[in-house]
Each structure stands twice: as C-alpha cells, then as structure tokens.
Image (cartoon, one colour):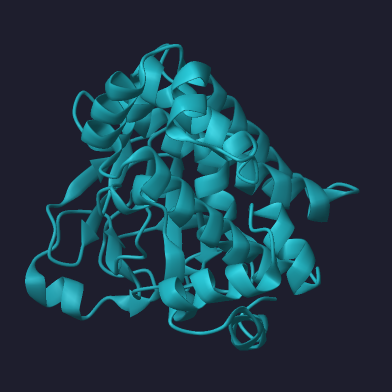
Length: 309
C-alpha cells in the first residue's frame, strides 16, 4: 500500500452513494453538513457551489468538486443572496424519484446535469494528508488536465444512467476510484503544503513508502536511512521538517492508526493485530494502544463495530 491509499482506507467505512440529477429552472438545493466527504461533478450546464462560510465557486461542464470535510453547502443556479440560501430546499426533498428537480423555482430556463454523492468516513483518526485538504477542492475541467479523473467521471456517468448488469459492484469501485483521483489531482496542482511536498521529496517519500509497505518490520533510524539512501541525520532532518514528526514517532502513530483500522474492519484476534503492526506481545500492543486512544483495543473494537455498515 502507498501513503494515499492507506490514508483513505483508514477512514473510509460503509459504501459510498451517488445520484445523477438534472436541475431545471432556478433555485437552490441544500446539502447539510455530513460526517464524511461529498462530491459533485457537472456533466452539462453550469451552477454555483455556495459552501457555509466560504467563497462561492462557479462550476462549469466537466468540473469536479470535493468537500472532504463534509462541509454544508448549497448548489444554486446563481450566486444567490443570503436569504435565498437560507431558504434552500434540502436536497433529499428537492428531488423526485427519478432524479429530477421536484421544486423548480422562478423563470430560469437553464438546465444542469450533475453527479452528486458522498463517502462515509471515520474521523476519529484522520491521516494528516487528508486533514490538510481544504474545505472545498475545486478541479476545473481544463483541456488535457487529469485524464484519469475525466475517464472515471465518464465511466461513472454512463454507469449511473444505464444501470447494466453488475452495476452494484461497478458503481462502488468507480466511486472509490473517483475519490482517489480527486485527491491525486489536488496534490498534482499544489505548489505548497506539507504532504504534497513530503510525497514529492525523494528522501521523505522513500521512507514513507517503506514504513507503509511493512509497518511491522523492526525499523530503526539507521535501517530506514539506508532504505532511503541517505545518512541518518539527513533522514531525520528532511523527514521531520516535511512530515512534522520524526521517523520513529510517525511509525508509532501509523502502527496504532493501522491497528485501529484492523480492529474496526477485521475479526483478527488481538495477538494477530499486534503482530501485524509490529508489537511483540498483546500486552505491549494494548499498553501502547490505550495510551494513544485512551481506551483498550478490545473496547475500541466493540465501540466502533456499531458504526460500520
């Protein structure tokens, strides 16, 4: 696994959902704050995204937008004033059973077709890469930009409109792929930021790949420095400056974060979980996990089991 894949897999729970919707006339649809991440992709036409407390964003055909922190927002045919936004119809009531606007307002004649969806996320242990994402990630449709993202959007739109055999599995896979491509596209466009810089640095990136590929290995600073092809002081300096933790501090944090995912998503017994994340005994693992999470691993498993589905 790589860092981006691990960052997503540790927080993603349940199944993503999506709708292909067509909006006619003028009006506003409200998306309430959500304990997950939302997205919109404009297939035809144009509209505005008005996030709670944020700057209005105009969206054109082919644009994609990710709201990684579940920020409440409104989709509107124009940069509506505060009163119009306050009166926006909740999205669930705003649609009929066919994905059409049930409550067209005003005399506007514009028509917009969109993909709207959301991902369920467990925010108890968010990787700093995802925490660094802004409230709104806008990925405009530019010629030649992000071809993988464009291909995923095309496939997803076709699957939602045609619903052929196997669509249930195909849609879930395409929605997961869309999330990866949106985050990857954001990273490619960033010129600042800690994690794009860390993953773009050959030394820090090599060390992170090694730690994520085998977190249970008996890593030391010397061994990790050799893996990255630099001296121990060079590794410590560059890794800490870019990642915000020393290599061994990050390893401990990642081991326990990965352990929490295993406790949530598998039925592996505690000794197996301990070995998979590099602890020699269940006691040592339980002590470290309790210190980090404030609860023993068995209780954590019981408490998180009810939130997954």
